[in-house]
Image 1 (cartoon, rainbow, N blue to C red):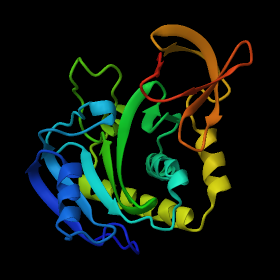
Image 2 (image 1 turned 60 degrees about the vertical axis):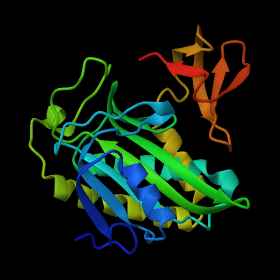
Image 3 (image 1 turned 180 degrees about the horizontal axis):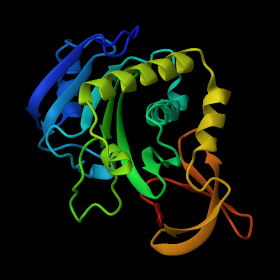
Length: 251
């Protein structure tokens, strides 16, 4: 059992579900969710990813979980710090398992080199300008070795190390890392979180090619604004603020 203070003290194990995020959201609607509840499924039939994408996961091979939090301490204008916090926790998890060359591809994909190992989907519930609940969906490739050709650059722990991993052990390590980072966020350590995030942000201060509004540009990542938009600097020193619909990384 996870020994963390909040996250993972209530774990709901499911065999088959459409989406752990949908299930967690329903728990919230029915007032059946305490903070830190984790929903984990062996199989998701409609796993959710960013921008209406689906998350592919072979049955029982990976971690597909959703976590319910109530970050009422966090100002709404700092909501992207949740994304930073969870992304850094996954980086911590991978480092614990001796994986290196790690990056966060904005807004919240986790990469090993140029290959994606994890994705995050955060769904906020805000009322009256204040947080009520947040559902954090995480898909993390553990033991899967074959992926659909539609997925351009996937990787898993097993592909990286040629080892078979215990899913429950991985879950416990991950929840402990998220707990530690969540406590850091509760302590309002914004500058520390910012600095660590930028240190592993893909293409930070590196010139690279992007598709911006369907046109190829050369730019470098120079930061994230307070609304979570990506800041790109072009060769003429102009700064572009991008949302997810406007920009695509060329990897």
